[in-house]
Image 1 (cartoon, rainbow over the protein chains, first blue to last red):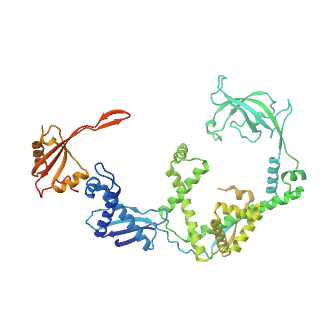
Image 2: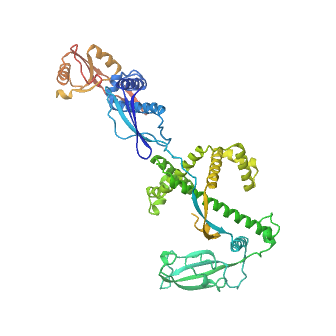
Length: 452
Length: 94
């Protein structure tokens, strides 16, 4: 059907395809369409299928022509795309730029643009240099972890009548703001507000003032807040809060001994066991984090060396996917709801997409480049590799290999796992060829502080 | 009565389509018009030369809508024969 075709490369890996269809084919296609319609059309005064095409044409002439044009374009594009190398991406439907001229007795020429898979240059990953901070786990880090475990295993007990509030007690209070004439400020009252004294997890930060109060006692607290106070509506103001301590509980931290270790998990017999395992966990966390950093640095390094022109539709598809994910995460079923929530923070969907764009583009580029590299290097995921991966995961999660396998099969993400194994192998090779320099020294906590 | 308002609409049916091959064209016309007026109206509007004209007063048909009796409207049908070789374009395809 297609008489001539012309392919032009545009920017951002888009392609402009110009197709000419001969006038005979146009007429033929139109006739077929007309016959098709005449067969099924029902018009008053005619039995079904008995409408003469001349009547049809008179009645629906223009619409028929547009329909015929659409069909011709569709089938000819399909035909051409089958032959040529520049195939459109799945999420990029060929679009018509301008309304083409269509007449039954003329050759029909039209052009469509669509995005093709971007050409990814094979990146050179030899001789990369990256800088990774030096991190050592200090004794303080371990102690912090232990303190957290104690905190988690603390037992909260009611304090006896008449005892006074002390730091680290859990207080339940009712409070309200007082206006100057002693009346309650509307909307400021709270009942049964529970917080731990000393943590400052309350609006007015009256922790210090509450210390020393007895259960059931009421107190008027005058507070003035600095201009840079955490909560804006109170910054720079002075006011009086009436607080009533309605309940008081003490937090009993367990002693740091073997019993605590046994409480945490049955697999620990002694405190030393717990400590050793804690150390192991910390090591692992550090190692994972450092590996992450290394991979990130390596990928950044590679990305610096290649440039991929991403088609707009690819980025849009990624953005749309992120939008869907966000929607799912927040449990909304419609776009409008999420739009509304966004509007509360003064943003539109477009703003959000623009915020995401650099990140999304980088993610796609990373994926493309890594894919290309693993293709170039002929990385494969053999059964042995897969077995090793199963084993590793089973050790990590404590599940049996069969259980993990079943889970993956259920979710149908086996392919995903395979590609990940491939990628891991590739990254390992890249890392092996990369010079890792020691960066500045960093404390363990600081390493995780900038976690995004 | 104006000649322009005599012809109300062409009647497009399978039968009228067949009749067209015998140079006979079917119209819905103003019930007050007679054969001569209709022929004159056709002559003026389509610049053709009518030869003769038959008229049928289409009778109302009883219809029921939600159990209530009713009738369709009556109307006047005119079949105009024109000189062989002439055509009326509104019946032909575009």
